[in-house]
Length: 422
Image (cartoon, rainbow, N blue to C red; front, side, top):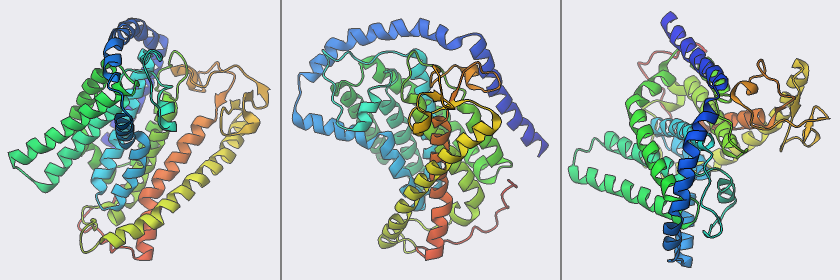
């Protein structure tokens, strides 16, 4: 128990130390001054190739690549992962959720460190068919998040399927690998065709995605064992999530990337805390899986009809509760706050007073005990708690409703040690 507490404390202290050192040495600015000109030059050089690809413009290709981009977008994964939890494949669902959060954090950190431009529009034709794509266009270019996420999540899904089915057929493995490569290739080509990325962005997303995937495959079992059977899991992850809100680089100009990181950081906390508390009830390996006699298609549809409205209600309530609690808490502690989106009375203000503070500040400046800022954006905390509540409901509240409504028989895990106290 003491050794566990030591490594957990050492990990958290190490991240805090990195935040302080990185801020003191101005690491972000130095890396940007080295990498940004090189990437920007390649973006400009790639423009003729992008225009050449876009010469094949057709309404079918516009719709196909726009639709494909939506299928591998963050909103799609956010909607798909709850269904994966409720289908009985809990291990796959929590691993893909944490991997998605890790990819989002690493990819967006690199984006905002480099702060490299996307292809210039015009001359490049940029197609943004959805509101999500319009928001994506406000982010920096390198690396391509769609490419990075597709490499990691499709690669991990293939690994899980082959391991779960224990299939050793080389033809099946080759077919699976070919499908993953085809999907990644189409995503990369589509991002160029839509004018969202240059070739260097795609190559960067591919390379970084392969590195992250290889790293995750080497640690995912340790991470999963820690979540379901570890000690002090919820406390440790809550502290880690809080610190990671500050361990984020300052972009050259503010972008939505930090908001995406905040949301998935909250999702990871909600999933980990919920699974850790209810693993033996709802998420062990003996739970019914979809397409079996214990969880039929009508039963799974019933879960969806109950689960989806429930998590939407929890998301709304979590946001409303956070909007009420955080300003009160900040005022009690004497912390000056503002809101750029959620609280109208605090928009453009610092507790009612004008403030010129930026939403995304430097590493140490974000830590209130080191800060020289006039105010802090309370939207970050609201967004974090909103998505943490939503994720918790997916793995704790909703499965409890399933059991209460007898939507599927969920046998309790046997011969397992009780989870360490939290």
